Length: 238
Ligand SMILES: Cc1cc2nc3c(=O)[nH]c(=O)nc-3n(C[C@H](O)[C@H](O)[C@H](O)COP(=O)(O)O)c2cc1C
Image (tube, rainbow, N blue to C red; front, side):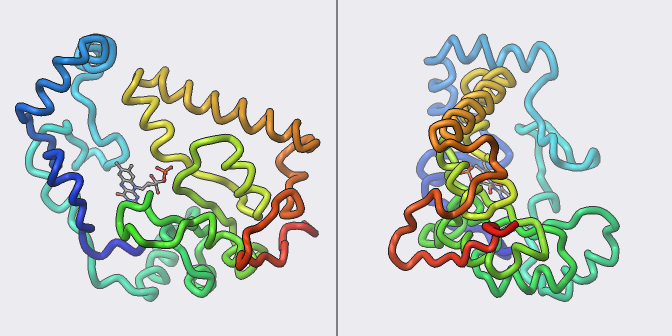
């Protein structure tokens, strides 16, 4: 909800990343310098399902990552307001989640618009580099709307212990972005599965070390919150 314009990704300018992907001397030599990845990941895709596609896009805009042009598929809308969320709510009969919440008042507005869930997120820190870390915003959002809507969080959850901390702060779920992407980049689907398995093992282990039989037993008492991070512990009584 909070990306009305493109962010200024200087690292993409530096490393030559574009959408669609363009072949450069640098990325071509990089791939050639990693024959195991070339054969085990890229070649496997090319020989089975073909060049990777934007699987989450609708069929009419789904395309190979090297295809042109992206056209409207990547265009952003800089005129969205909360009224649009209300309209979406009327049009969309299924679960509606509002992503990109970092302020408790926005979470309240999303709930007032009829959202079923809010996702406390800064889009992986890829939009405003100085934005608040979602884990820091989470307690106040849980306090504000935790009894009304599902509260999820993402950004920076790399370890099972990170996930456990967010659940203890009252998140209903933690979403994972790059952890599985790193796995995918390293070894395709098996790599993503491995990343998930690592997270699961770590969550199980830290729960056992805390003396919890499951995530439902977690609450803020398991954490020492840094100064200034207030939490009324809305989920404690849940
Ligand atoms: C390559 C990439 C593309 C992303 N594109 C979008 C996007 O189009 N819209 C969006 O809301 N978030 C986008 N995100 C953010 C993710 O949906 C998610 O919020 C974030 O990756 C979670 O943080 P994590 O990667 O640290 O787990 C993107 C993240 C990555 C790494």
